[in-house]
Image (tube, rainbow, N blue to C red; front, top):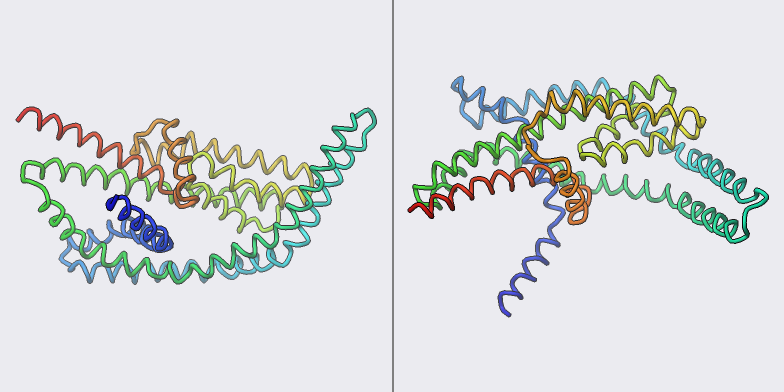
Length: 337
């Protein structure tokens, strides 16, 4: 009974501090991205703390230059999109409702079907009316989470600085006969997670640029913003491209039905390019999971932790797979002793 009480308290505490998981996850991702540069400088005789600071300066400088080049246009598009969102929503609402009303007014439809269509019209009106407030609430939520994001570089600094000591401390918790297997486990986990994070981010960047370029060629408004959103959602396997395509198709639909069809074709073509060329070449088979396993992992992650769970589900499942393989080796050794 007492154990159950402690379990409930621990679960309650984790739920209360769940927002702190965001900077921790970002810090781990940032560490994996920057560690190759840190290790390169360390091999050349630079102390690890100084190497981390130098990489931070170089990354910050490169990021500032990129922002200086892209941000003016991007911020202008975001401002225009926010200003035009009510008008675009109203246009989309008009197109959808006119089509549904025309469908419901056709002669020969049973009265029950007409009533169902009228009910759908009412639901669409309520849904689209709430779209603007939801988007504004999402933007405000991003701003309120900005302070948590700022913690990520600080946490990443300490993770990268103390990583060798963390490994030694972890080994000290186990008998010496397990050290070789633990070192092997650490290397395999590092290979899987680092390869997945770096590869997936690179693929998403390429996909985002391709989508932005394609939408600009189709004259879909706010192509850069929508393309970057599509690239960001592409991090989520299988479901991300579909989610990222929704705002692009809706914006294209306000232009014309033909533009919406071409936008769908663009997303399908880019997704096929990713599946056939980009993902195998850049990410490869590092994760080593069956597609069905990936889909189930993403669904479970979404159920447990929403978007964050979807992002973490695949590398977490890959780590569990690698750990299970090492555990099987341990059990075999124990039986042999």
